Every structure is written in structure tokens, then in C-alpha cells.
Image (tube, rainbow, N blue to C red; front, side):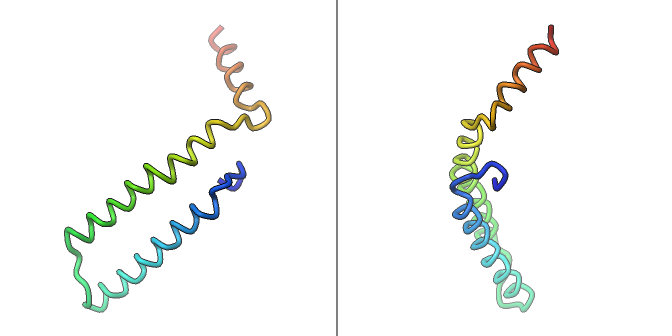
Length: 85
């Protein structure tokens, strides 16, 4: 994301950071016996990942595929075509 200068990088990193903060707190509570692993906890985590992939990661994918990166995409297509000739 940094290499392609993704404009949403800061927000994307923030989302990951907030999840890690929550996970670290969960692990701390779990290890101390204050919290138990439940189906709801696992579902919440799964739902976070699915929502993140369908929203934030998808936005990056769209941005990435719209970039030409100084003609590199076109160069790759030409090489692919030439390799098949």
C-alpha cells in the first residue's frame, strides 16, 4: 500500500491497529481467567475480518487495479501477448 501511495493507507492502518488493541486486551483477559472464548467472540472476530475484506481491502483493490504504475500494467500485457505468439 505504501509503495503504490494508497490514499486510504492511514485509515487502513488505523483499522488494523484498533483490532490489535482489542485482541491484546482480549488475550490479557483470557489469560487471567476474566474472559472465556465463546462462539460469540469467534463470530465477532470472523465478522470483523469479513467486513474489513469486503470494505477496506476491496477499496484498496479497486484503487490498485486502476493504477497504471508508469505503464507497467501495459508492459506486462504486451509481454504476455508476445509470449503467446
